Length: 343
Image (cartoon, rainbow, N blue to C red; front, side):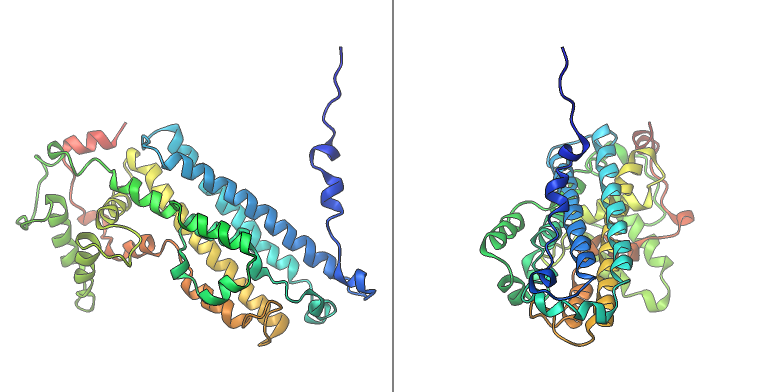
């Protein structure tokens, strides 16, 4: 008894994909060779956005539940974050292919695209929202709303009202157990007197950190207290989550903290790659259309530059590096805690 196998062309639905490039220039009988490249590049972007969203959703499913920090589930989170970053690197590189189109090549068909614009990529906006970019943090909010179809606007709003990866990260960091167990600190050796109302480790670390600052860095100490002991609605990480994240960065060499550190580092790379993509996009748009407005009516290069400067999603994690200290001056952890951080 035999069954028909899956055919490559049918599996990939190549009839649909390869016939999905309908150029506006052909419809108008205009010669515009590079419009085919323009369409394929942007279709490829949207396919990769779909994959990135798929990976973010899978990470969110894992992190929405209590999870052992040394489990295969956490390894999967790291693996999928690294996959996202590999895809983002590819998206940056795709700009080089688009850059083979000259400004005159683009002008052959640019006016035929109005009012379509890459700004209407609802998948990219959903990607940003799922990562943690809120509406109130967006550059050009009124324009951002006006250019989207109602169904896409509603989809993005629904995502913005759901827990983002950044919010799940905050919850996960707040669950760090090591500071709540007094047994971990009964044999912790201090160099300085313990400050009142400050946990013993952070009292010691703060004083050592203060001594490491130069005279023109002394204002960092106020920032230390504001970041780690004061709640601020403007920040995406709570004070407790910030303390956990800094602790992970400081003691990442311990096996139990290795995967958590890779998660934080991978998220910083997401921000770096997104900003690199925006920067390359700004330069490409400036080269293509100069100071002219975008096909969708935006201010073109100026709008993209504003988004580049404002749309950093994991900036509160990046800001923690201001409070790092040299390894040879770090407090030595208690034997009890060292044992828990090992295998």
